[in-house]
Amino acid sequence: MTVKTLAIASDHGGVELKSAIIGLLKDRGIEVADLGTDGSASVDYPDFAQAVAKSIIDGSAEAGILVCGSGIGMSIAANRFPQVRAALVHDRLSTELCRQHNNANVLCLGARLLGEATALDCVEAFILTEFEGGRHEGRIAKMS
Ligand code: RB5
Image (cartoon, rainbow, N blue to C red):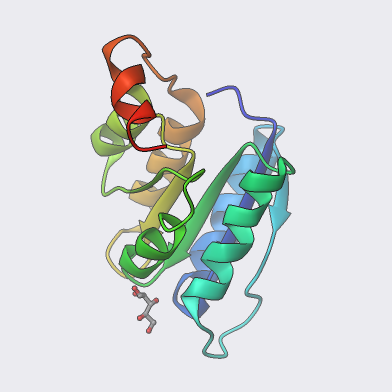
């Protein structure tokens, strides 16, 4: 994906991983909007999923990344917005597939389930992998 602008957010379970991801993205020249959270205080993941979804919908970000403890809550919350195709991934292959086949525009990661190296590998695959189009176009259109 040729992404220039990306919005990222996490709940308290994903703050540290979010910082590492921001470092990687900035190293790659991507403009990153960090929509929080900023500390260890307990927060509600749907609020942060909504903030990233709004950035996709209003066009201020081309793609998004959401991090919570498992990634599950974030993916459920983000997929309530029709313009969002959020994928909860666990490794590089599932990340490549979510781009190639599903044209995912939001990556969801579980900070308590993935090591940092695996999570960063997923982020790298997310920003590098293109949608294949073709037979996948119609399937995605059915979800919009
Ligand atoms: C927070 O404790 C935890 O529930 C959240 O980070 C996430 O895993 C929810 O799906």
